[in-house]
Image (cartoon, rainbow, N blue to C red):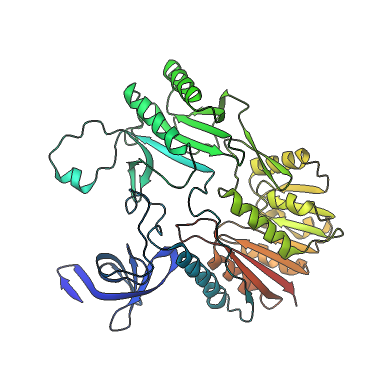
Length: 469
């Protein structure tokens, strides 16, 4: 280890595996763990220490001495600057291997659970172009590369349409290409950008909170129909209509175009009044015979094909019969609940977001499902003794909480309810393992199935089947 002032360099660190949030993990000669960003497992690196903890270092690679055999050439020119696709330089098979290992280790180490079956991770059929929703920001403060900053050249126009630079809330990467959403996503975004620059339309100034164009969202369904959503900081009717007409004429795939005027301090759309300029203001998605209406504020899984696999596997784990009553906690817009309802006697869904519950009820009506009932409220407040006393007891309970996992009171209520079977779907196996630890005295974890919803990232979902002891 070399040291110069506060610049501590750890030398010749062999990175052996992947850790939380996709960092590569190695050890110093003294045996202290090093979490390294900017490298992949298998690399040998020199790394600069960013934080020194009692049990580990957080560091960033400054020199790659030996390249990992698992390395691949990144597809995107923005790799390393853009905050997404951080594993684009790691082979997809190794991505799957490390995700599987992470889930397995979390269930064992955090959950303290042994003797469960781990099914092989379900990889995504599409390694790229799998997202059906992308959001971009307009900015008059384009991110400049180090080369541009150090040169004395005047780069003139600094308007950008793309992603926020990690840790730089006011800077936007001017995105030239992206491999996450299929065509015509790139062409559409670039057409909007170039038109706006050519016409002199104001890109948003986040520091001074002024400008015209604020955000752009592109959303598609599996039938190739597109929704376009603009957020505008202020109304400029003539400029707005000319821009919208240009895009609609150039891209006939657009099924609907909507917009909102947003003079707030943030880009959240949920409290805005969204106006429809073209089309119906929504698109439909179909999944195994079920139809779902998707509006500008709707939540829907961004990887359609893999979401379909996730729901099918959840149904397979649950082994629903026609006499089963099923509870679906954190039901969202009721997608899983309605998947289950095709097989079950009765399904009860609970969710904290009123708009999601309204959508769930609308979807159930749209699909002719009369055996679904949905309730809105904070899970720990709705899922109570009184609620359980007024509803049939479930044979199967499905839970799909947010990344923070389930509130302890919800876990306690599940244990009191004691359903024979639980299927726990999670986007964070660490908090899932924490919750499973609270239930392991009463339930056996029979099997788990990791599901990769987001290739080129460290994120992974997991399905766990629990059977009452």
